[in-house]
Amino acid sequence: MKLEQTLLNFLMRHQEKHNRTFHFLVLMDAIVAAAKRIELYYRTGALQGNLGLAGSTNVQGEEVMQMDDIAHEIVLHYLKSTERVIQVVSEEVEEIIDVNKDGGRYFIYFDPLDGSSNVAHGLPVGFMFGIAKKNLDASIQGPENYHLRAGNEYIAAGMFVIPTGMFTLALRDAGCWRFHMDETSTFVKPVRMELPANEKKWELSFNAGNTDTFSGNIKKWIGENQSKYAFRYLGALAGDFHRLLANGGMFMYPAIVNHPDPKKNRPQGKLRLMYEANVVAFMCREAGGDALDESGTPILDIKPKTHHQRTALYVGSKKLIDSVQKALKA
Ligand code: AFP
Image (cartoon, rainbow, N blue to C red):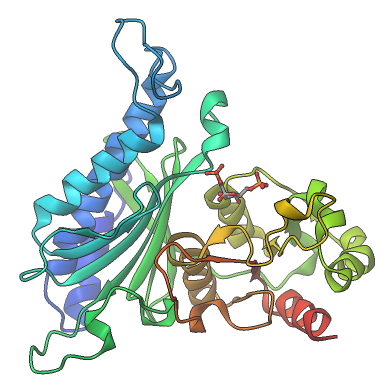
């Protein structure tokens, strides 16, 4: 019998090694509990008719909540129960949600069910989150006491690929780690993720149907580079990035600037900075990669102006990100 190290044991050792408290473990325990509950709901939802649209009814004749709303409720419930969370930003709610403004330590930015177009098919979706911490010295009232934090101030970021039982977590300056759910529903076996140097494995991932709508520079870059790499696209960032971390290459969601219907242009990009782009950029940095926006600015350096701010995203192996950087600036 081979017994593997659990996620919580791994985190405990990490905290001890860096002389830190166990508050972070309480937080992570809640995040994992939420992920497992979402995973269970997702795996059984189709049979029970619970993956439908809000307003429809399930086989028991009960009104169905949209899966995104359910996932949001689940995450919020577990985060509140820790009493260690100050505020959260959730993809599902317009406003910032106050949780424990006086006693909390952490800000959490999350998308509880990213990739919702996959829900109807039971295909992978993501629960993605980033964590920042407030300044614990009450005498200092700096920007770190405020929720609008750049990704390079996050202390951790992670994603569950639901319903595959895979979890990836990056800890600031301590690497990017992948865990698997075992038979007892425990996340175990930390494996350090580092983007592979072997370019033969590298893949490109983007919505190729949008190519004509990208800027001239990016279209040119794609024309010159796409035949060198395999192409993969699932349409759920957590799933696409999960592959990329193992194989290397680049995921991109460029700005849409040449749409035939100009109203459909997205010069700011589509993905959300605080709980999509920052999460993968943070994990990618810890795995030896990099991430940029359309202006060539490192994603993690962007100081958000609003909590649901969007961004274009280029994330992956350094060599490809450097090459795109040159194309963006050409
Ligand atoms: P949804 O949750 O609205 O499906 O968006 C998912 C997402 O933000 C991200 O997970 C995907 O990478 C990206 O959008 C896919 O967008 P396209 O459907 O435009 O390719």
